[in-house]
Amino acid sequence: MLLLQALLLLLGLLSHAQDVTTEGPGALLPMPKGACAGWMAGIPGHPGHNGTPGRDGRDGTPGEKGEKGDAGLVGPKGDTGEIGVTGAEGPRGFPGIPGRKGEPGEGAYVYRSAFSVGLETKDTIPNVPIRFTKIFYNQQNHYDGTTGKFHCNIPGLYYFSYHITVYLKDVKVSLFKKDKATLFTYDQYQDKNVDQASGSVLLHLEVGDQVWLQVYGDGEHNGVYADNVNDSTFTGFLLYHDTN
Image (cartoon, rainbow, N blue to C red):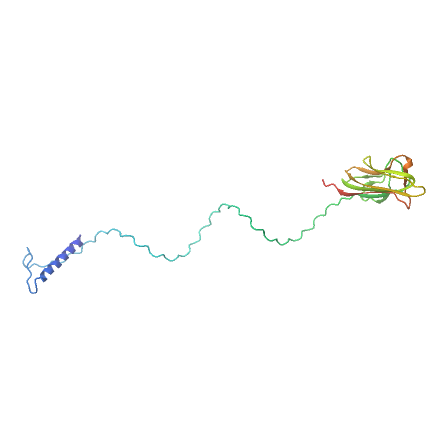
């Protein structure tokens, strides 16, 4: 308000000065109306107080984009996320380098069962096991020379064969398994001549089975013979054992 009054006073003084100049040079200024003779202008008053702040102006236009600031500090590690979906199988890789040679393993157990025997006497008894007492091989002792029988200790498939020298009489022999004849051989003796008879067979045996050779029939077919130059033999061995 004081500022407005000062402006009005200033405008009044300017207007009064214009009126004086329009009278021409040397003209006397008339006295103001209602003023005393000898009137003089007063001393300027003190400056008025500051007015109240005006309203906020309108927002200015956005400035230009500033330069990129420095990188901030690394934040703390976040929590582990959930496992994602399994991706598609990739292409097959190249073969790797061969590994080192392994240590030698334990050898597989070898099952053995074998025998080969011969006749030492030419006197044999019909219908009882022939006792072959001339031992060529019987390392496992699965053949019993006192009975003439082979005893199975390892279940599996076996091969048996016999070779008989025939002399003075005809020969009828049979191979027995568990008290049952499974193979028969007959040979007719030729007068004044040594003859041969033989046979072979594959048999599956269980533990405890027995196999032997014997003359069957009466004494007229007991021409099994052996001496120092002629042998009658009986042989058997395991081909392979049962796995179950």
